[in-house]
Image (cartoon, rainbow, N blue to C red; front, side, top):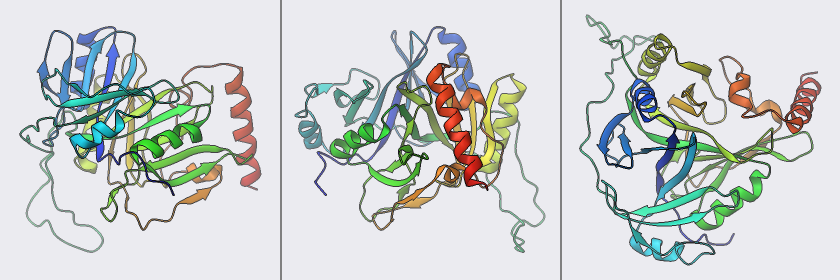
Amino acid sequence: MSESTIRVKRLAYVRVSAPDLTKAETFLEEFGLRVAARTEEAIYFRGTDPDPPCYVLTRGHAGVTSIAFEADSAADLERIAKIEGASAVGKLDEPAGGQAVRVRDPQGMQVEIVHGQSALEPIAAAPFHAFNMDGYRHREGRLPAFRPGPSHVRRIGHLVLESGDPVSVYRWYHEHLGLRKTDEVQLPNGATQMRFARLDRGPEYVDHHVVGFQFALDEGARVQHIAFEVGNFDDLMTGHEHLKSRGRKNVWGVGRHRLGGQIFDYWANPWGVIHEHWTDTDLVNQDHVPTDSDILGLRDYWGPAPSPAFAIARWNWKVVRNVAGVLLARMRAGR
């Protein structure tokens, strides 16, 4: 296997635009992100972990406009700046500082590789309590102490990139940023429906995936959703009830994924951009052996089926054709 240009260490942040910053900020605060800084151009949100801001909100057409990964060193920025189409290393004139290289991936998404950003002080995380479960009695004479309100987002964890050719998009991230295949789900014709990819940190255990490369039913290209870790299951459910009480649109959840293992809950902002809460992911390292499965591999351990709003970003004739093919394959596999 050829060596990648660099091996990134984490998903750093996303840039998301919205036509109404006030409405967008209200949603994000109800979702559990917190304002870290404001400038004339943007609002910067953070989680409870000490990482630099993980979400940059700007005014514009609704959608994710850029995704960013952190590099190990300034030397890695110099290396990535030499790939085709990349910018020179430049200063990040933003609250967290640092330097960045910008480049477009094969589907046109802007990717930023950053280094040298300033960390933040950690803030109060989600409350936690011991469980009296599985025959163990760890909580005696104490009651859980949860208050109504938003979940406590800890950090950004992963995102899903949709396209008509997820394998070629994955290949670019593998060759240049070092992402490695964890598991894959395949369509009836053998093509890739979803390829989960993780960070390559050698023997260090990392999240099951940092990017999912998914076949888009409409064969368009976009960030399908962005996902944030919350403190624990109770924190996720407290946030679920809070968002529901605010009239927000739940597009999938609560459930537990089979591939990745996360307990999940997906919500759409006022313009349909999907944000996920998750907790309790599987962890893998260099010893993990990737698996391939058929379309039934996307079935979850438990929970509801995804809504049409989650699965289909826009309707066209390709969606009808591709959905029919998936449904037929599931019927055949279920026999």
